[in-house]
Amino acid sequence: MKETDRLFDEYERRFAKAAAQIPLRDPLRDRAEILEKVKSCLGFKDAWIPSIKAEPVQRLQMQYYDVELLKGHSWDRISICANLYLPHNRTSPLPLVLLCCGHGLEGKLTPIYQDAAQVLAERGAAVLVPDNIGQGERKPMGHLEPVMPFANGHSVQALIVMETIAWLKWLLKDSRFDPARIAAAGNSGGGTLTMFLAALAPELSAIASSGYPCSFDYIARKEKKHCHCNIIPGIVGELEMWQLYGAYAPKPLLLFQAAGDCLFPMDSFYSNARKVEAVYEMSGAKKNFQAVVTPGEHPWDHQRIELLAKFMTSQLRLAATPATQNTQLNRLTQTCFEHWPDEARTTDELSCLLSGSDPKPELGLWDVFPPPISKRELLALPDPGERGTAAQIFAQYEAFLKH
Figure 1: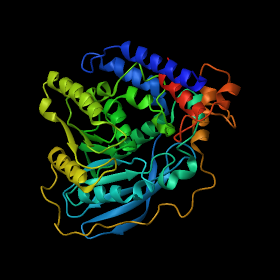
Figure 2 (figure 1 turned 45 degrees about the vertical axis):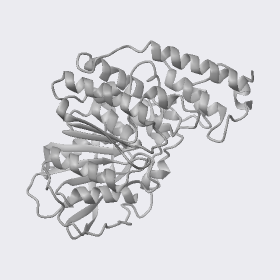
Figure 3 (figure 1 turned 90 degrees about the vertical axis):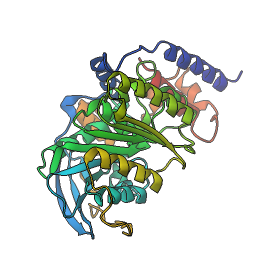
Figure 4 (figure 1 turned 180 degrees about the vertical axis):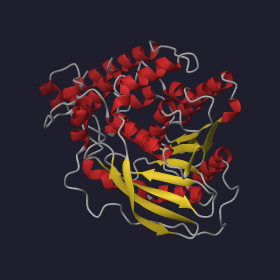
């Protein structure tokens, strides 16, 4: 057996052992323990949640809503930006949807996210669409491959979750918005984020999460390079997704997915949904949980936007119909920054700022999570396919299995 195949076989056995030994934590009875484990795997610290400082730099007037282009800072020298959709002629305070972006190439300006925001705004909801760390206008920060967060004992996803919770706290201080009607929605990477918000942001009144709900074990076993925001150290063998979603019970939760999504299989989606539904039933709030499979592929389409709008209309008491049935979808091109600030920190530098460590240049993920062979042997292994190097894939396995 070739060394690469031997290592794959060894990891398959380790994943199977971890899955067999995962503690059976009940989201209703053991919620506090689940939250503690979520924070531990992410490297999430309440004390690290920043205070958002953001101001509008431009206001764009549309027929039925306006859009404020926001920019500012979260942590020191961490530049942020977001688009805030504000509907016309609605009574205050406004319901609001925090729209969590996935890996759309243009961040908050990705056309399908803009369409979703417009559809919700035309029904009377304010919509905040921030660019996540290293995405959209913030791409210079780095998102796909930062290693220092892992070297410093946390994760890229922890930084994203902490900053998103900071945005939520910023919204809750704004008298324009109804604190009892603030929801979150997201697909793909936004589905990842909304899953963690289900566990860590009880202030949210409703959550819609798609293009991700399945199992950590399935995702971790993929023989491909992950975006580093998808790597959650030590999560396999500790928790599964249904426990995080279940921790949100009894509040309204919608999980949805496309039947043709090649990244996340329907069987795993249905299994996760069955377990979450059981938690909601035990909590006496089965009516507050929905799981829906639609036609389509991984990215959102307009059928899923309508599904999302229907859910938010019910939960946030929006207008039953949009302001007009014939509105043309508007596409924004304006950015919040004229150019990316020279003084802005990168994702790796942010990690070092929070942890008090020094940057380590040329650090690979395999240096932080070393597989059980020498580094020289590891880097000499042939690539197992076209979707990632052996060093990267095996380091990811070590990360997910770390305990």
